[in-house]
Length: 187
Image (cartoon, rainbow, N blue to C red; front, top):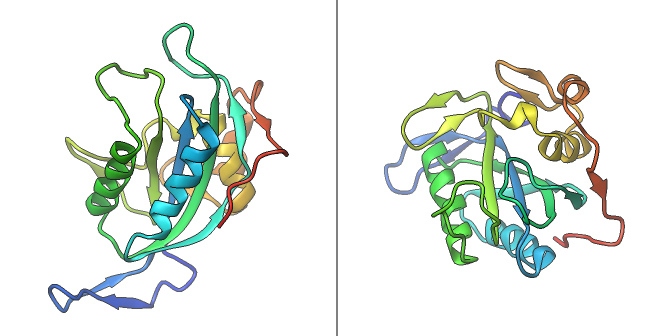
């Protein structure tokens, strides 16, 4: 994945007067506590209300078994959101974390059940590795619950340094990933 379909469109930064490219980004959202669908819907609504973010597509909702989670963790509802944004990668991460916090996300136990998870998977072809952010997401290429919905909304999707989503799916376990025809996220 590279820049957005309109990579030469720039957006004026109202704070500095600088110009920033519009990048396409992929976010994975999931919930396995409480009203799971309502939480995914709320995450999409919060992203939609975010300045400098335009939602391009939202995948179907998929139900999946938890991965690397404590025993007794419930099934997740997952989806992928494709956006165009002029936000910096760290500002986008800050927004994702703020959305999680607004829905009561508890980070005290690693991989514990969660009210809402909003992961930044890729932002254009950016690569980052610092104490707060790794891009592309370091485990996205191993997770069917990310790759399957991503392929649905972006058949040309690519993880920089890893390959095309369509090719990566063949190397992951997709058993237990069920598209929920009865559930829908409304834009």
